Length: 120
Image 1 (spheres, rainbow, N blue to C red):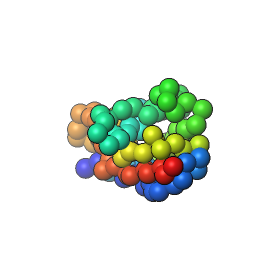
Image 2 (cartoon, rainbow, N blue to C red):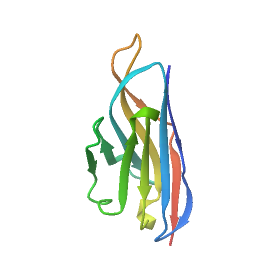
Image 3 (cartoon, one colour):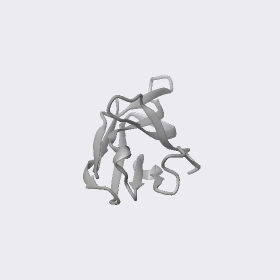
């Protein structure tokens, strides 16, 4: 079994900061790309940021310059530092990972999501 567990969401005022974490656990052989996605009220899920196993990052235009994604391969954990938050950043944030586990084909895994609410 493989699990992704997010933490760090909450309520913050516009202009504030939050740091999300996502830890992968289980019978993991290797993790390729890890990413953060979000789904706002009445919206489709969208990509926020991704990071490869060697640390190459990619960001949605809407968060460039404000969000920073990082990765600790030793801990199978990724982080999303969110600064200068805006009300439009309000969403459930989901962690995603491309994982090869013992006895299983490489698959896409999702966390349960963590709520981020930015008040104006």
